[in-house]
Length: 145
Image 1 (spheres, rainbow, N blue to C red):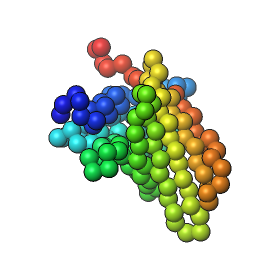
Image 2: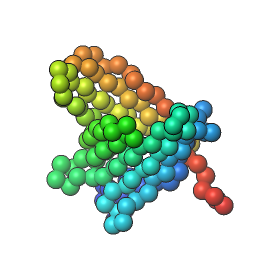
Image 3: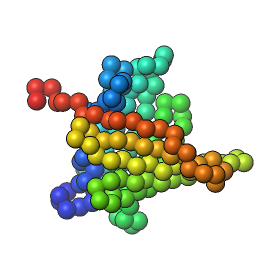
Image 4: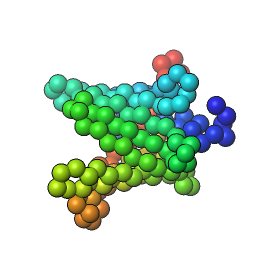
C-alpha cells in the first residue's frame, strides 16, 4: 500500500494503547488484517466483572472516499460511522434509527504528543448534541523499544 493512499493514514492507530487513568485495567491493540485492507483493534476493559471486550474495525471506502469505522461490543451492540480527516483531526459520524427513536453520534479524534483525545457526542431523537465520552488514549511503548 502506498504511503499516499488514504488508507495508509490509519497506520496512526496501529500498536498498543491504554486510556489515561485506566492503565491498569484497559488495553487495546490495533493491527492490520492480512492484505492491509482493514485495521482491527481488540480492546479489553478489566475494570468490570466480567471483563468487557470490544472490536473496532477501521477501513477506507474507495467508493465513498470516506473512512469507515465499525464497532462491536461483547454485549452484542454494534455501530458504524463514516468519517474524514481535516487538518490532522479525524471526524466520524453515524446514526442508528431503530424503534421509536433515532440516535446519532459524532466522534472527534485529535492527535496529541502521547496519543489522541477521543471525544464523542450523541443526539437522541434529533435533539441537541451532548458530550457523552471524553478519553485520552496513550500509546503503550513496544516491548524492548
